[in-house]
Length: 120
Image (cartoon, rainbow, N blue to C red):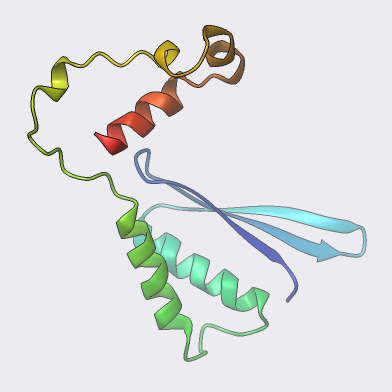
């Protein structure tokens, strides 16, 4: 009870993590839970959210919580490519979106290309 539950999910790289901040007498302890699949992640996330509210997995809202997390993850999947023109001929350069200095400083190349792949 009283812990903070933070999701850390990246669908395209299949990264499903949960960050828990648990209050102790010395401060907050940080615990990471890594799941292997969306289903496992949804169950753990639902359980952690309920536990933060002082409820157990036996609570009636557990299954609905799992379903809402699963449906939210489903919305984040990249769309199937729509054949509109010649998209593959477009050459995406991160420098077209952000200055070269910021691309290097914040290591944005992967993030920009990944975001563009999810939109296209």
